[in-house]
Length: 573
Image (cartoon, rainbow, N blue to C red):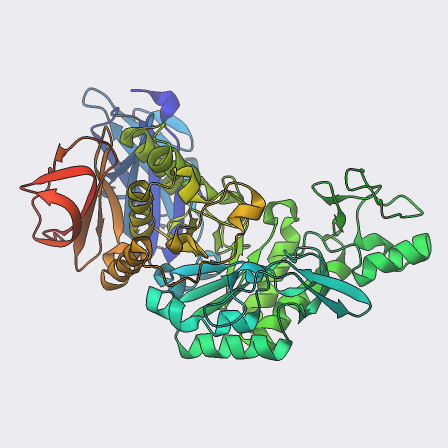
């Protein structure tokens, strides 16, 4: 037995409640190392000694290149649980508890792993609606000026003595007048990049957190947009930029003007007085910034005044405009205490509001349930890029990386991840595919049938390409030219909507050989398998379907190169 590979972390993704009566337990072992793993559990407050244990056989939930992951979702009669594991490799049976191995069980209950209390307040519970969301991410400046039209003309507007800029002419009116287009596509949630008053076209250099940028429209136009979305059953998520402000933001302006006498000097990091705004874009400013962007001074979010200011912003847009969530910019660079306070503020207005952090790396630290409900799943994009777009890894490696990604978060958080192929910060996935629609289609089908909420960056469905920033923020294509890729998106979204197992079901790998990748999604009522042939050779499908839900390239049980199949399967509860 490979003892070094065995891992269990209590009070983490390896042991967490998903409701007051059910707890997920996970155990990692070496790949193909164990024949059987069993959980033994008991009431940690049991009045008799020795403790009376019950057992539950764990299932091999997943496998990556190095490890197996065993899991059981336990319906426990106890809120307070002590537990340990029994590992059997076919030759040896060992007990694993408290990070130690033993041949026999000790009677001291303090030696076992502990779940002190499965408290409802500690359960990570993203809003239920997120699992059903298909998100459309709009970069407002580039989307639409009006119905099926983008002017592609720069704009300037005055805002309290400052000039705000637009580059492509997009407006909130344009978003509102194209809601029918989005509804026809199957979208039920909008995520808008920043819309508040700011200097540059991207609106990440904030001037005013309480008003819409005049290049995009008015506060009232935003109110109408939210109302129209809600009438259509669409949620609205907006971008919260609290890590930094624009250098003409009132508090930073006060610091520049008054220096050490400014009441706002502690709102920012590492100021050197007198504070000066360098004219050279390549200069290193004498204050902390977002990256080295001199026009975006970093805020001192641990400061109670700064925290209170931004928490009020968070409450304001939920209370006054009815937004359904915040996407939180540069989330990993802001202190944890701020996010806990922000969560309390927003959830106090609407517990059903979603909080999505921009975290590019492993985000488990922020997904314990006290900060975010979800994060932007850039890792998924990275794995899809290597498998579908570039083909630098095979299906087995892809599955291993997807497995590792699935096992690192608590179960409810995995189902709430924002799964993107594109965003305003990265090259278009279609370009990474060499503008090969067959590769793009397989990636999109995977995105729409995987765990979590798929997010479409505006124009992905129209085949917008672009590697550099000015290219991937290209104006929306509103031409009447027929677009097979858009039809594919529409069908994939419809499939997801019509098959609940694709939104809420379990995930099991069926095949990962060469370029063929197959997996099964199953809930209590149905089971669906998805087969993706990401290679240039035909393969024999190992599945016998009950019903074909959608397929391209299937004939006589064989799957053509770059073909796919989605089957309804026999369901075994």
